[in-house]
Image (tube, rainbow, N blue to C red; front, side):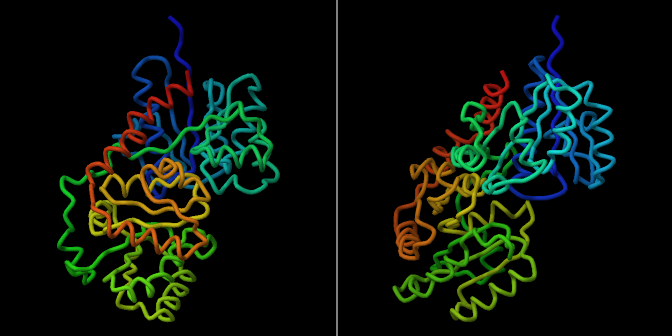
Length: 369
């Protein structure tokens, strides 16, 4: 009987932090674990920045190692384990040094690199540039990311597989689509209020998510008589928090905008249910897991048309795409989303046809075999 191929996943983080890449990594480990049950492969994972053992719903702790951010310990451990690896999967180009070490030791063995988005949208230097060329296969989370790899890095098209994101298999799907009373009370939201929602990282160095552009259209919406509130959720750094507060004051939106700060996992679904529409006219998404989470909760979604968001919305079939640099397009889309009849079950079901975890696992199997 042939020995199953031995895969090893090297990841930046998975369980100690929250974000789109971490959600992708958890789903990837679970998909590998389930494919391992077929007997065609075995898989292990090493996570550089995680601080504790894994959630065993996703992976077995016996095949998982974490390194609390210690790069020397991480690299030394991989050096001694690479001999027992047939295929190495890097979860991020920032792990390039480990991938190049593996190819130096075992040049005939396969190396795969996952490319999410903004980390490969601009020219790279040094090790990160070399790893894109050395890899046997690149997994791009969207066609947009694939195009950037080809145009910015001159990677041949045949070397890149499109491997989209997925809804987390344990994402809490709501049983109904009713606003949670406790959040309405917490944020002072009345039954008549129409609520826009954005859940994202609030980082002064990024500036591409588009929530500030949504803020700027609110005075026009209010002048049209729409009783709109805008809930912005996510951890903010100090500079961005100060900038947002100043913008809100300048626009006189203190009564219309709620900035929640970090939202714990157990409240994520309820925050989506609080809203009438999810809006994030971003310009730098590789894909945007948050869009499919919003659709899982039955929300109409508004996203930008200049990045990987287009694929999360299936090029407009699952939501409204706008030019993120056009305030008028953003405003028109918001009005349309708030005024059109809601069909949350349809929104959820159409999203799951494309981005369920079962579909993700199937795509991984197609890429590997």
